[in-house]
Length: 501
Ligand code: NAD
Image (cartoon, rainbow, N blue to C red; front, side, top):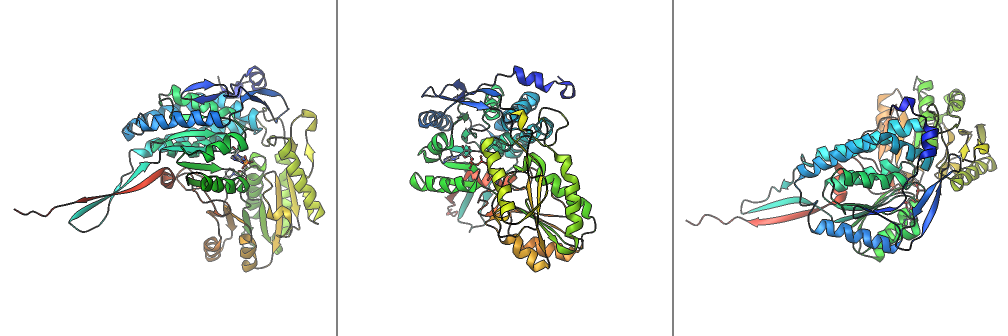
């Protein structure tokens, strides 16, 4: 069916998503028999019951993943074989594009046009990219002396536990699954309890594509139940986590309390967007920050939520941002033209409104938005909101809000801008806007962030690493570097005997 002619409301009404786990290639209810109800944040409608996975379900999933790894049904396949099956998986994702997009929108509230145009294709591209890569990466021979040969090889780790958030449920899962599966690991994925449905469907599609049962298991459930059981499991070799810095700390503790499994954390952000007075095209910078921050309802780890503007151009810059804000007014996520949807749930709504209140309380000036919207819908919406006159010590400048709230901070000098930008516990991304080439390079080098953008914010590609400095985490998703996370590095020495004849 053509998306342009789909009636998303009708299709949503007919949808009956399956919330059971996928373990060993089979749908399963929770071992306890328990479920939890999943409601949609777009209007509060009931989407369905979801298996409330816990320790027993994680045990079963890890046992299945371990068996799949140990009998080499996947890891023992030639890379070209894994490539072919992962390519089929990517094709199956694209073939299920509309179903997956609708599930994603209903589950976590983002506009259907972006689920279709961004989330599904990015997920498929990620899987396909690692499929394509895996039979093109070579191991090494070390430049040692001539009486020996030292092979440096990468081997799959074994069983990888992946724990992901709800803001880009499929993409975050794909960033783990692509490199982990391509490298030959088996995976147990725990999606967020706030967005379980697409991950479960992905696991079914993987089996349909021919990936052997047990290689990808998905167990939904709550963090302190299924998540904790997975991260503490003695049979899991690595945890690849994306989520809040608070939960990332726990991942390190779980590893310390169990088997010292590898932990890769992709955590929160409070990214600085620095606009110098020498940047001529202020309207473009202003439009970019509005588009990037308000995208996905502000629920992006790399949202440019701290906007540092030189005082001489700040009034003009803020005026353009404020004029942009109404374009992002929240509307029905199932309408094809909607650009801002619903926050993921009532808790997130309360959190975001709490930060807006804190901004007022600490003396920042709210120059756009600031209110809840569309409450008559039964869903959770907030207006695109801009605070001017923010001080970097205020709560709205220091903490990750994860909603459509921008904090504008004025600066006088380059040194001050840099000090403010780096004065954050986070270091995920940053951007610098300047027409002075030396300044742009100088500042980009000095910014303590995993990704720095110069005179743009939108570029993104599976070919580049994604991850943070400081409390934004320690891992890198995407690019060939992600293979490092899912492989052990082995050295094999071979003695070469001299010719004694
Ligand atoms: P969260 O930390 O609350 O939850 C993330 C996942 O961890 C969920 O699956 C949850 O069930 C699980 N979890 C929660 N508590 C747990 C516990 N005690 N033990 C084990 N598992 C537990 O984060 P969230 O609210 O789902 O996601 C938002 C956060 O994710 C933001 O901070 C955002 O910046 C971050 N994020 C980071 C990146 C990145 O690449 N750096 C990308 C997307 C989102």
